[in-house]
Length: 136
Image 1 (cartoon, rainbow, N blue to C red):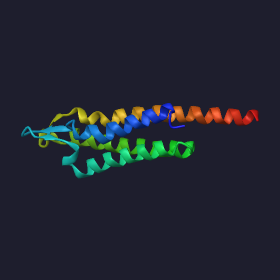
Image 2: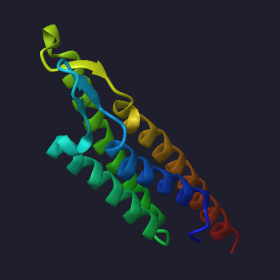
Image 3: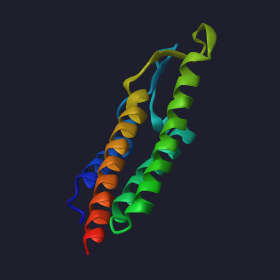
Image 4: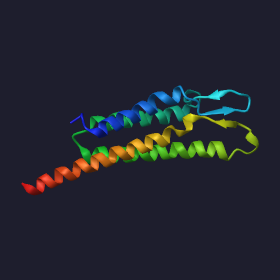
């Protein structure tokens, strides 16, 4: 059952969160220094946790309800990360630290979209199994 579409979506989340933040800048400071995920310990740790949760969710393909819950937890973690990025970029007045927002700030948004698609496919599989059980 690893060949399901939600496995593809979760693999994309794992690749997006595990690889891209370390190549795409999150923001550019006033002095022109680009800040990547490895420069911020907390941010890189959250990206690693998101990646691990996506891989764990892929490996839980036999337990669809638990997979659904792990994906929800992953979405909440991505929302916290997105909130941190928004706070970091908007609350600092006078451009003291953040001068320009990078494309890396959108990574949690893409992760959330793919997690929603994966949860929709998991729900569809669960409904199919329940309908087959009713026929027996």
